[in-house]
Image (tube, rainbow, N blue to C red):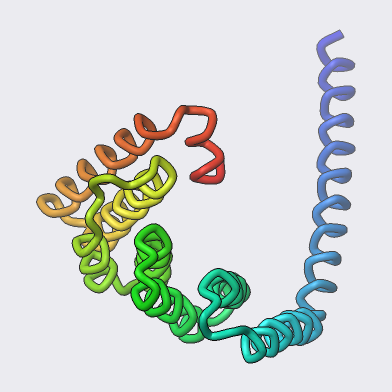
Length: 196
């Protein structure tokens, strides 16, 4: 009886491994196919960016909302694509917000700038941005974004330092900021905010 059970289980394990191997091969085929289309995807993205730039050229220079919205859309196109271009457009968002004295938009833009710098490994510059932001009186949404940026920044520098003294301090600050962000934003909204 034990031998029969062993043979049946061994046979089923073999079929399971074969099925997983076929599924993996299929996924690899799809992945290779999509990677081969990289140039196509880049061209589509560049076309969208060119259309947004064209709209920007025809936008009234006194219309803050339209300009800010277009800068933001161009930034979103670039932020995971090209750091230098993303940096240019988020800086334009900061500049126009300062020019029109739009405090909430300015802080939103500075948070986006800090995140861009963090994602590119410019920790010092990102810390400079967070220290410049006055967090008192921020809306719940901006306060949460600010705290999450600080938490991510401290976690990133802790991983970078990876030592016994400084890393621990940065990890604690990161945990504290995540806790504060969760207090500011209800739990169900907090999960959406950090993309859980």
